[in-house]
Image (cartoon, rainbow, N blue to C red):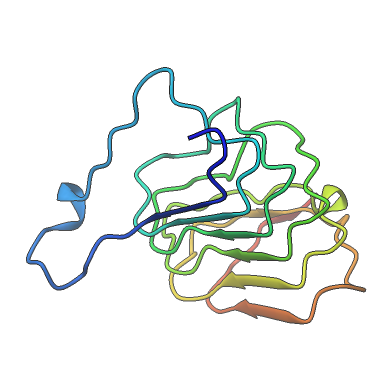
Length: 142
């Protein structure tokens, strides 16, 4: 899987499973490929991406309806990243610093990101073309 560029894990909403039953277990030694360009994991069960998540070549992160509390811990250099979709991620509390994402064009926090309390002020809006946010009640802009 070292050359994998697209990773899509999809859970159908119409299969009768409860949200708690959507469980994808990764092996302890699992590493996201360094050349990954597109990460789509609907209903992601992780609370953050692993510490060894590289992501330098990522163009799109789509973690709709996930359990993500924050995308990752620490700083990541994601110069190629153009889109982040965390819509309906009800556990989302904190966003990463946007200074390492100079080409970000789309950010979607629509539909239920009510727990989001911290948003970095370092965001440069020159590249942002679409920002969707509904029902976000920020307590802190850091």
